[in-house]
Length: 367
Image (cartoon, rainbow, N blue to C red; front, side):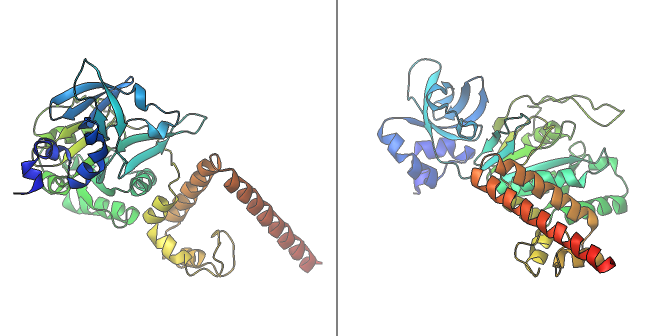
């Protein structure tokens, strides 16, 4: 008999993602008599934790550091008091395997963790509105950086009845999402849900997207019941109100768990350089052929990226989107890394000097 079937903790929490590796990581906490559990919801300094005793309310006062990226988050595996009053207390949480982080919209440019220990990041995009490929690329950069496997779900596919048009829309998204499955789904008609269900059944999935993207409807379809509230979409702009106000972790009937999130208005990057490179894999590959290893792909001689742009191999929209995300990411990283700030200032001065030298040479040639 396997340890999973013989261990009561395994049998109770396995549907929430508990496995032998988590059990090994929890061993020191178990020796202290603490109880393992997974955070299914966080609000106002307290959280709901699913344990072998059921869902318990726990206070996070002992694990509330100044670093906002280290606060307890939906999806965390934690150690709570084995018994006592309500709420109990979270004593610690286990090291995260993955974490989906974005930059806040505040001027302090802090990071905000949205979900922890996620295997699949589902980016929901509504076909009720015109596709915003740049926003999809932004979501995907954060998804890749988190360590999860991104999946783009084109919701409300029933609004595009022409299969040829739908195929073109899928193809457009695929060009902006290399290496990422793109699934057209209609939660209303049940189309595509079997494929998506198979993808998310093997682990933890987080559902991301703008308000009105159909996340709550999609979550209900995957859960097989109306757990998440759904509000009507405005006819004027295809947008809806936020129907999810907290991040909730729910077990799926076909296996796996789903974390539903509120609609995200702002999706700022947070130290997502490698994620951006994965979204723009073709540019990263071209950059390896540039004459200079630190080529900025602006006006340098021997730039393979600019050559591909000139030949039509690389669409201008992709390069502009890449440049925008890289600039944004460099700014956010520079705000938290003094050494990088100094390097960036040095690089700006070098390029400024090169530009002035080029202008002087050009004037000299005109004399």
